[in-house]
Image (cartoon, rainbow, N blue to C red; front, side, top):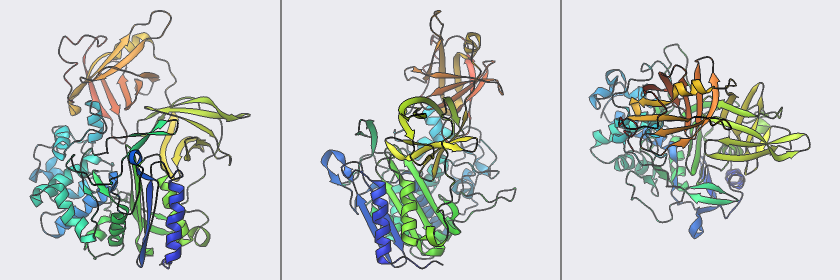
Length: 555
């Protein structure tokens, strides 16, 4: 076990990391929390509320997004310890309407092995905005009746649905609201008093941090306070609350009892492999030091938490904009607090450098379904080209990095684009954002486009996608739009024909569509979701809704 950092090194670690996290004290802010068995150091910087020039402080509630899964898992384990139900209990006890409920257990939900569909994918297809609020009951309604994407327990797939369902289980067993259940099971025992679960959209606290997204030219736009569902998100904690939680996570059998040890336990898969996803958290080792923790990002918010139980050290970083280099700040805090870089390993963590290489061009596709477009920009120097990058609704410029390790995003230098061998990688600090392969290069002719036009039903999202193709007029190519349910049509980009299908690949602002060239079957891929199946139910250019199909989507 490494000797714990002194008061001075702990405070220095927090101060160094927060300077890296927030470079503009008048912009969105953040906090770094460093905890060991002997004390706590918290450093805050930047604004919690830009409009009123309110600074981030130790008691400022901030949105922690998917770090809520750690708290949810703790609440579930505590309910199990109290005898409310067992980890082997199957979902038909509470949700007989879910397909496969009799074979999906609480343990499957905790370790992302249920096979339930990812609700974020379904809600986007159904035409919800990413910031719309859903209750756990709404989430269960989205996935009810849809076949599981894989057999329960057979593999791992990170999935927000699992944690919305877990929240509903605990709520029903406790006979109270989810916010009250979390307060009793986790927040009160550890001494977290500033934040809580925002299951009521009217819930507010004086000085609660806003959530901000870049609006161009150094300005910021306030988002809708990130509250999509609870269990998988919806949790607000102050830096002081995070310190209280970290202290509890460092002491097995302390305030939270055996739930802490259960948090990082991982069951082997049927093939004997042991994945990294545990109960609401990820497990791993850096330079030989075992850790567990979580990384969270949502509209206008970002956070990371990492606990080194053998070394008596824990670090949390939270920011009220996703543009903050949270991962790099965590690395900086750990290195400054421990000296592991010099004493234990030349690299902490061990992540290979990205290389510069040739400038990518055209469309590239990520493993998680996103499409990225690369073009030359004016940011280059001499023969080294700069990049203009477009993905979804985001567009940004990247310049060749001075150290010759790829390209650095101009507005967010911690984000690099570069080559790792033959692969193109996008990375924020040490956190990998995307690993890309070239998009389809075979052009799509007018006849093939006409074959995929029409109405495509997505029963799992209870909506219909209408693909419309405007015929070319001789001087321009055909224009393609996609309409989700009752939303207005959106112009999209046809990337090309993937001959492995063969499928027509279409990039939208919310994901990829892969439509079979025979016009019958297809799939939508969004974020970390599995491919959501689509079935063509109406032919034609999709412009005529007289059959009543096109406008049947839900909002």
